[in-house]
Length: 411
Image 1 (spheres, one colour):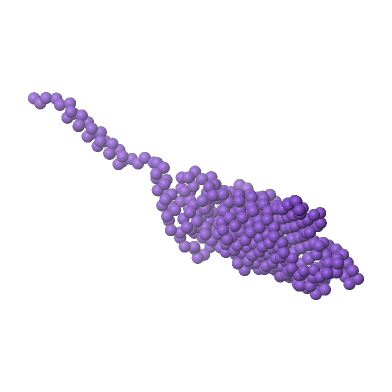
Image 2 (cartoon, rainbow, N blue to C red):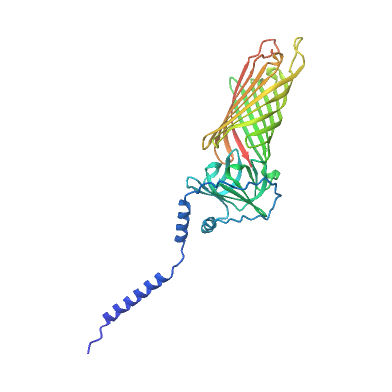
């Protein structure tokens, strides 16, 4: 009769338990976040499919539907959003980068995106592969259609969902604004102020201000700006220059626009200009718009009126004539935080009224924070046939100014 061996019995029990646990783990799978990570990783590594050759465009104006809900048929998008618990907008770039935040608007082929981690970004529309959003947008297509709804971008196709789905090619999107077209979300502005003060042997005060206000909708844009440079040395006025500009543009298509209002108001008493009004209209075209740089030109007739600060026997109190104006605007992003802008306008008029009047502004906009910028502006005004000053001396043809200031942006 064999004797009872406790050690052998314990080993047998461990073997039985091991076999049982192996069977359970093989038969049943326990869900974990690791599975979601695998799904997410596979999703991001998925090759971007080629853009479909045919998509049914939509050019129907759809009234606002505040109850619109995005209905996405792509199960991968749902898995991605649910696995991360995303209740915000997200975009997937063609480079493979994934961003979470809020889509603000799209103008000039750039999508304004407020990233949760990276702050405000400007992203080329052509660099974006996928988008998913649960908020309302108002979009305009290149053929003039205006649609309000939620959006999703996939495989080069933008899907706008409200009471039904509208599909357009990615490149057919012209403009996009967050929400419906209400006054609260289509206005933007910036105010810049700078000053230079010195005292002692020379008491000098110089200050400059620049205010900009613009209104962008899916079909039009209004731009206004006011610039003032004031200088005083030993209680003597050395600078007084005011300029107000306003343009109103109506989009014809993606690149062509009509400018029914092109207004310029100018005052510089030291240059014998009490008031100069230039009101015109024109047709404009955007030659370059690739996300990094923009170039557009506007040409048209105008009416020029000048009231002089002082007059003599040879000079009337005021003069007016017809003119032709050409405006060129160029913008370039030379760094993530630095934008360069140049605006040039030439107005051809009668020789007695100055001949060719040229105005040039160069501006460097350096972003310090989301709302605070440091601006460096250079102004060049040229009159081919300048007037005489109060002493009868000929004024200089060229007038140069430079201004520094801190700017605050809103909306």
